[in-house]
Every structure is written in C-alpha cells, then in structure tokens.
Length: 316
Image 1 (tube, rainbow, N blue to C red):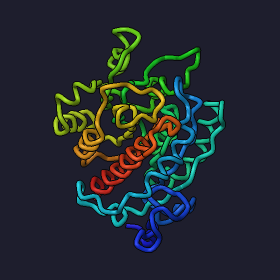
Image 2: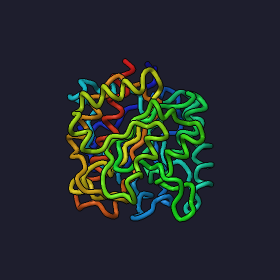
Image 3: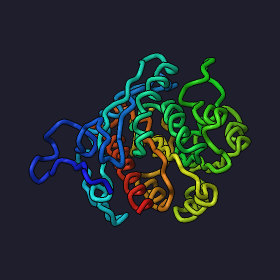
C-alpha cells in the first residue's frame, strides 16, 4: 500500500459540478510516486471507419465521471481506499497519422508501465489498444485478452490500411502481443460481409462469443469460461462501448442493434473477480452522437470505475 495516497475532491466540500474536470475528480499529475493506477486519455479517432468524434471521448468520460463515488457496494470495496489513483492526463497523439500516434503513445506510456502502475486508458477509437499492448508486453510478455465488443477487430485491412480500429487484434496476434488461445472476444453481433468474418478470429485461436451466446451463458458461466482460458496469465481487458445497445449508448462510431444493457455489461464485469489485470481501456465513446444526458459517456465512466473495483478486489 502506497504511503502517499491520491484522493478525489470531497463532494461534501466542493460540489460535483465544480472544479477542473479529471476522471472521478482525482488529482491530475504525471508524478507516479505513490500511485497504484494511472487513468489517462488517448484522444484519437483517425483509426475509425464510420462516425468519428472519439478524440473527444476522454473529455466526455471525465465530465460524466464527476458523479462517481468511492464505495462500490456491488464489489464491497472503497475504490479510493484500496487504490491510489491519479489522472495522468492525455497522452500525445498525431491527428491523421496512426503510426506516428502509436510511436508517441508508446513513448509516453512507457514510464507508467515501467513504474509498475496499472494503466487504464480512456479512448479514443479501438486502434489505440495496439500501442498500449506494445508497451505492456515489454514488462509482462504476451497477454491474454478479455474483449467486450460488438466487433472482433481482426480484419486484415480497410481501404488498404493495416492500422485502423478494425485490425487491432489481428495485428496484435501477428506482433506476438497476445496469446489468442488464452483470450475471449465476447459480444459480437450485427451484419457482416460474409459468413466467414468471425472465423478469422477463431482460426487465430480466440474464443468468440456472440451477444446471444453471452445471454445464454449468463455472467457466472461466462466468467468460468474466461478463467479457464486465461489461467494465471496477465490480462488486458478492453471494453468497446459499442457492445452496449445503441438505445442506451448511442454515442459511438459503429453502433449495432440488439446489444447489451448497462446492467448486463456490469454483471459480466463483476463476475470476473480474480482476474490479474495488467492493463485496461474503455474505447469508442463519440460524444457528438451521444444523447443530451451523455448516457454513453456516463456508461463508459462507470465501466472504468468497475474495472478499478475489479483490480482492487482481485489484487487484495
């Protein structure tokens, strides 16, 4: 336990609508002394293929996170007491240049990973995950992936581009960043270009579950399957908000109908107690398409808080 603890502003002294917007009103600092977790943004959307705006995702998630409170009764954990968390700010990006953005993100994220601080990213489109994985594996070796997403993101290319948000996990396997046989992609749904689209992931070694599969399994059986695949490996957990139904989360780049409700998504995350997280991200919030209540950003903020609770109880 860190001697110097980072804590959010007290809402009983400074109301939640006041103050500079940071994630969960936590202190913004790049000094990692005493930190267990660094939450940071990657405001990048050049990798998106349909609706852009994810560059504004970190800002929207931070604003929506103002209502988060320290104690999570579903986990029976005070996240702020269990973890010393900082908002590390946003990592540098190069709009319009995915490869240069990767270089900048890898360079900026290096000190966080080297310090042994858990990285939790706020995206940004799903192309950003590749840069995160590249940095993490230098410390952990190949990771298991737990992915909640409407899309597998294992295409080879799009308009001749090898790096965009639909190719991330094919590239990650090719680069030796992931152990696909230890990884589960869940929440797949929607129309595709052909009957073999999801077979690409399966041939790579991923376990692939559709949204219907998830509902048939339920949280407990899903978590059992994940643990069986993951074993003792360190895990990167990536949550694409398009796994949620656009009725509850319209603010995303590639919406697909018949998705999860927020209570279903949180139940799946809560069933994963015990996973050894090496890193995580919440991606694809595009606030331009969100509702007036910013419900997608609110869902993303709460998912990020659930991931912190998962880390807190699993490392205890």
